[in-house]
Image (tube, rainbow, N blue to C red; front, side, top):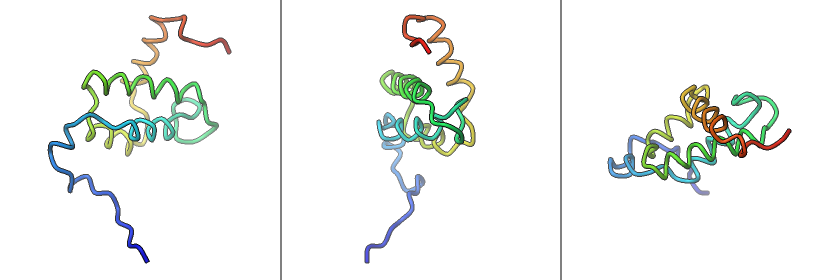
Length: 101
């Protein structure tokens, strides 16, 4: 029988921790907080999920979200206000990107 192990970020090398976050991490965060009101519980909100994914992947592409930061975000209890504000600001600056309800 295969033995399963728990992921331990402390066993990762420093180079990997400072490298960009992975798309899998971004998707995990998207699924975790992509509920009504950016919460972990409630009804899945596909629009919120896509907003989270776009915001975080943009940060990864600009080298502003690394592997360790994404890991910390994945283990957070709530979706941080700084990211919510960034999403709100982007939508306000680009109203054509917001879909009609």
